[in-house]
Amino acid sequence: MKKSTALSELIINSVEQLDEKKAMELSKTALKNGLDPLALLDLIKEGVIRVGKRYENQQYFIADLIMAGVIFKDILELKEIKQQFSSPKNVKAGKLLIGTVAGDLHDIGKNIFIGMMKANGFETIDLGVDVKKEDFVKYAIEIKPDIIGMSGVLTFTVVPMKETVEALTKAGIRKNTKIIIGGSHLTEENCAEIGADCFATDASDGVELCKKMLGMDVRK
Image (cartoon, rainbow, N blue to C red; front, side, top):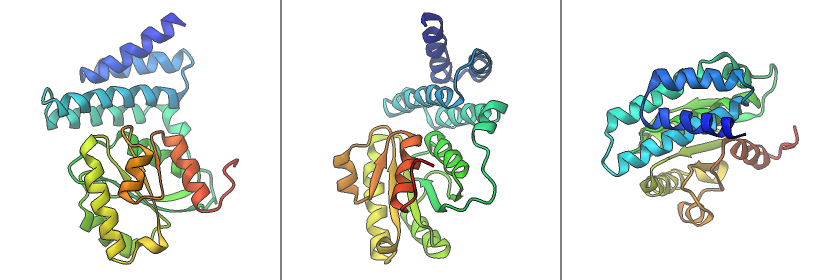
């Protein structure tokens, strides 16, 4: 147990220190030793959260946030991770439009969520990062999603999330579309303030909430 805990902390630290090579080597070792792929992604996400905190404290810069995203994408390319996110054939659950809100360049949690939604049969349209409220509205009108997802790691993202919901409401999109927000800092109070239908701090919970909003059997 101590060895496993030590390895987990090394993985988190390697991401926090932006050591791409070490993060990859440690991740491969952890998977070889039997670590669940989703548990590995949680460790990577924790490392990225620490990078985000350093950015907010002005210890890191935008280039460092981008580097953390590169490390995450490298981990996603590992065979065990790809297998975890393989989509079932001929399953149509719903359509998700998603993006990281304006001012935030993080996409780790968003990409994990997207992978899990695809694995559960959802069609996903990813707008990327630093997405302005006008773009959420534009693509929502064009795509007509069942669910709109907004992601944010940095604490100030509560404001652009709220502004985006207000813009969607003004455009008449809100009444026919469910909204889920995601981020480790979010609370029930934030969700109510923003005006979303639900929030998730964990990708797995987010998938279950989306299925529930569309009346699907969450046990499937």
